[in-house]
Length: 342
Image: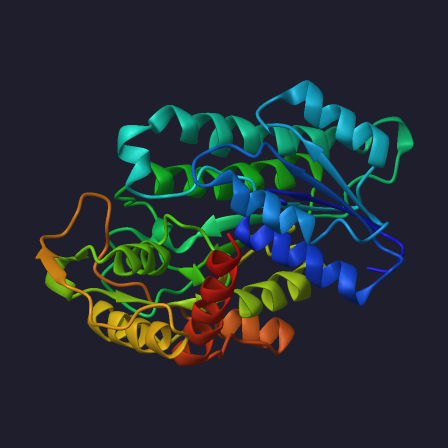
């Protein structure tokens, strides 16, 4: 990626900020352009904290704006002419999509369409154009699939949430634009990402906030759920590897590829909470066991997620492997330090 211009949307987000930092630390010749609308879906101060960590690099430029705003996005593409685009901007959250569907249509459908259109027109007037579009999909698109581990070649036509449906639409749109306009596109199905300075709407962060306040935590499906928790550093390594190699044309002549990025070791919600409590106690965040409330399955949830990462390993020689206790220890220590300063 030497001397390339890389556009990262969702740059103030959990994955986007960590990816930008990783690229900047490794290569001073790359220009990283960050875009984010800094919405208030969760605590904006966390997003500002992440951006502050990127300010020290001269080859990082941040622009506040919404990818659903075509004119804003066109100005970014025209000014910077990115060669690699990593679209991580999206309205996240399964349960939030039930009560706030408009946000998902705006960001995940219209916003992604705008990204594709800008990539398409980056070739106008003989310009080099975007050499690779990498975009965030989600493990949620596997929906009602019963067979595990989830393989990228499995059918994904039974989503159980609007969020999942929008992510599936991203994969379909990317395929169509790659076929029509030759844009090389790679989709990444992330599996339950966690780590320091993560998203407060994720279970591990929400559990921690409640434990600190002495409130009971809610375990859905009575704690009988399994998730393929994937540490943020593994996600960043996977994204970075994929960015450097645009897909070759498949048997249909289309340059598209989709990968799972997951820890390929699902753990029960019960075990996860026990490990989290132990890590928080060691970090001095809590000093007693949390009170737990066991509830039925919530709309939009799935029983288990489990990633088959054989394609990722075959093509890039990499698979996530950070043990849960290592990742949660890092989160607990960050949480203790961050909230102690506030």
